[in-house]
Length: 205
Image (cartoon, rainbow, N blue to C red; front, side, top):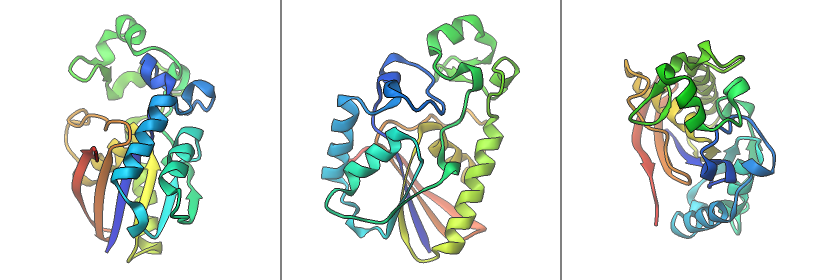
């Protein structure tokens, strides 16, 4: 049995401004002071010493979150491109409010976030299904490689949601919110074909 603990990175300035970060990796998408405090609070309340390793998205905001969580534990850390955030293409760096005003037909009003068909306007935007497919590949490969390990996965909001969508396969891809910063989501994989969502979007405080 493989246990995966999916952690969304701490807050960034882009988060606070309501921007779509996508795969941007500049100062505005690095952890801000609040994000660093969030990561430290998680480290104080969610002891990762039980885990065997950390696998992390290669972006700075996730790497910094992992570093804070791993202080004093020194778990081995590797990086995997499949854990990157969804890329919104030309919409990376744009404000949600401005996009919603201009393209209201591709926004979900309850979550105030884009619908899967946003790609008809966002050049080179990544499809929801593409992200689900890449995390499915990561999940299956990880379960095969580490069939009896407990693994911390530090990644991004939509990417965590994509893992949950991969396990649950709901008919409506908007039925789940993106998890909060430094929340924890737990998956249990009994095999590459049998995975369970044990909890989602949990805050440890």
